[in-house]
Structures are given as structure tokens and as C-alpha cells.
Image (tube, rainbow, N blue to C red; front, top):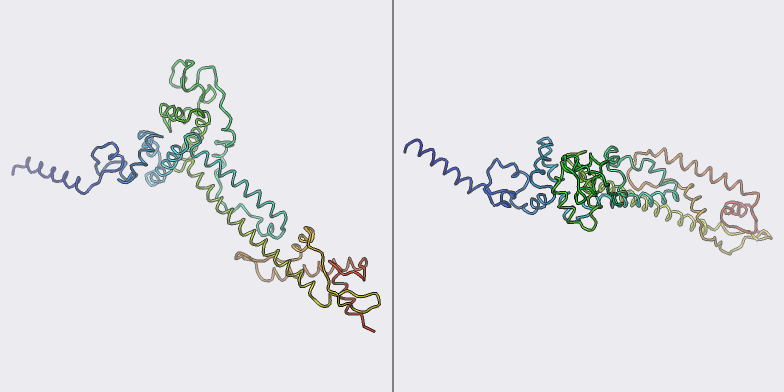
Length: 375
């Protein structure tokens, strides 16, 4: 066989083997073309991810998607691709808010949980002592990125249109007409926003996505600007990284709130047991005026919020979760509690009615009972 024909046979065999063993990626399958082993989209879009590629092309376009991926280091390109796919899916699912709406909801849920947790801590001093560093273990969102994003409530207000030349036309050095589709969203003072949006979504694709969100075009524009700013600030994770961080914070705060409720419930159970013991002890029976002990059983009034606060101050902490505190700490706490309890009882001793035994007077009445001798 001549060398030229042999080379042709080898080339044909290699192509045949490639078609036989190399499956086309989702991008090449979507465009119905052959996929080579050097295809840059093959590592990102496996053959079974055609829907993901279609969503990405609808939101970012394939060209912008690859441009954003190439801005990241090769070892982080897979993470950047997944975050872009997440944002694209959220934008398709919610044409108005996209992933920015989900992040806004996470912020509101976090605020509600923190408020609830603060109310519980105000009612339980021991819980607050155990959780003085309540938020230091949580993953924090970068402050610079939050400053750039601003308040998520601000994008609920429509952006006022500017009758002057819009920034989109000024950037492209064109005359702005009254029918300019960019004018309502990019007035002359939002030059940086237009540059960021055009780099992430593309100017033409931005208008196409805005038209799909009618009649809430202003809100859709603001959420897309937020997503674009987040992507430029963090090319790897973008707004999807913030959503993941907030979700982790929400999970941690929920676990913390569950532990606090469990601790609070356990302390309340101990209070009830303590009250029952005080009622059922035989030395708690009142002394009659003639000095004889009465067989009538003491009935204490129900606990009030002030009583609960006092009992919480008397009780030592109950360890629900493993802590690093030593046993000597709790021994000292119990000694301080007993001293406080005795000082409180001594302070009330001069004002106790000997015919009445309730609340803080139980200790004195029990002392009178020990000293009394039946005739």
C-alpha cells in the first residue's frame, strides 16, 4: 500500500474509532454536529446534560458562557460552570427575580430566625451565656460584595427612566431615541452597570430576557444587574456562592435554635420538678398559731414569668451539647447558687408571716417546723 493511501486508511480508522467510542457532548448534540475529544465544552456538559446547555444558551449565550469560564483558572472552571448553570436555571424558572429573589428570601428567613432566637435568649439568661459567640462560627458573606449588591429590598422600586442619552447608546456611540429599549434601565448615571451586564449576559440577550419578564421588566432588570455584579465580583461562584453561603447559615442557625429550644425545655422541666419537690416535702407544712404542726398540704401558686427568671438564675447550666467546660466550673456555679439562695431567704426572713407558707417563705417555715415542739 502506498504511504499516502496508508495514511488515509489510518486516518479513516481513527475517525471510525473516535465515532465508535467517543460520545458527543451535550453542546455538540444540541447543535447536531460532531464532537472531537478536544471539544472545550465536553468536560462541562456530559452527553446527558442537554437541558443544562440549552438553559445556559438561553440566559448567557454559548459565547458569553465560554468567555466567563475562560476568565477563571483551569482548576476552578468546573465550579464556575456549575454556578453559572445554577443561575441560568433560576432565571428560567423565575424570569423576574431569578436567583436574586431566592437570595432575598434567604435573607428574610435568616432575619426571622435571628429575631426568634433573640427573643428566646431574652427569656433565658443561661442560653444567652452559652451562645455569646452565636454567629462567629457561621460562614460570612464578603462585606465588599454585599456593599456592591446593596439592599435586596431596593430592587423592588422601579428604576426611573432618564430622558437624556442612555448609557447603552453612549457606550456604543449611538444616538439614543425615545424607542431605545435600554433607556428605561440604564440612564446616564449607570455606566458601570451596563458594562457589567453586557459582559455577563450580552446587550442583545439582556433585552430578550427583559421582554420575557413583561410587565415586571424593571424588577427583572435590577435582579439581572445584581447577578452580573456578583459574577464580576466573584467569577467562580457568583450569586450562587452567596445563596449557598446563606443556605449554610440558615441550616446552622436552625440547628442552633433547635438546641436552644431543647435547652429551654429541659430547664423548664427542671423547674417543675423543683417546685414539686418543694411542695411534697413534709417539712413544708405550715405551723398553726398554737405551735402544732398542721397536716394540711401546702399548695403553691402557679409560677409566673418573674419566678421563671429567678429559677433560671438559680439553676446551673445543663449541657445539651458537648462543651469544653470543666466540672469545677459547675461546682463553683452550684456554690454561688446556694449562697444566693440563702441570702435571698435571709433577706425575706423578717417579713414572713408565720401562718403562711408559700414561695420564698418555705425555707423559714421549714425552720420553724424543725424548732416547734408539739405539746
